[in-house]
Length: 249
Image (cartoon, rainbow, N blue to C red):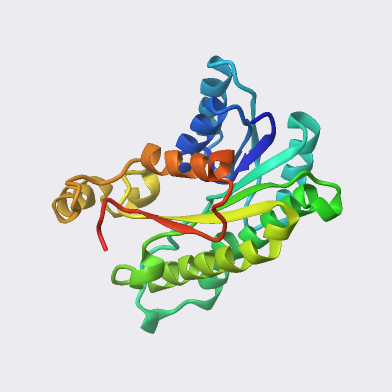
């Protein structure tokens, strides 16, 4: 696949694993980051060290102008866009709904949901056949919390993942005729930096026995599914949201 791919939140965890695996599959990868430049640089170095092409591009997913600039930079440095992985997001802390903070919630939705729309808009304007593109693929990361409502004190986060899944279903219908497939992934319990503020290691030990396959997932587990959905091998898969969760429901 000799096309450019943008991976938002690509400096660590699932995003980093996806960027590296996608590069091995032949994608030219734009590794987006916001607050971890050294990690993004390490991902780019790993890709280049294996003979691939990659750049690191800073863009705050709550800032539309920075997102647009990132896409333009990718155009100039990596060429025609063929794929997008909407992965960036954050938990937004833990809070009871009774202690709801509207300002914090707006920031959470800007990063976790509105950025997905903005990135999809920019990708569609480049890849849609009616706009001169050659088609492509989009993969949206969500979470099993979209189905379950999430853990205690994380309803706000779970609600954004529900929106991500719904967005995937609708966008697949809109962009399918344009040659752009849109699919999603709902990861289960994954060992990444995402939960470091909430005792990630303790959480992993506590939850692993509850997962039918007997372990928590890794970024690589999710990356394999994402890169397959981006590939021509998944050419008849559109509007699917895969639950990559080790069998835990």
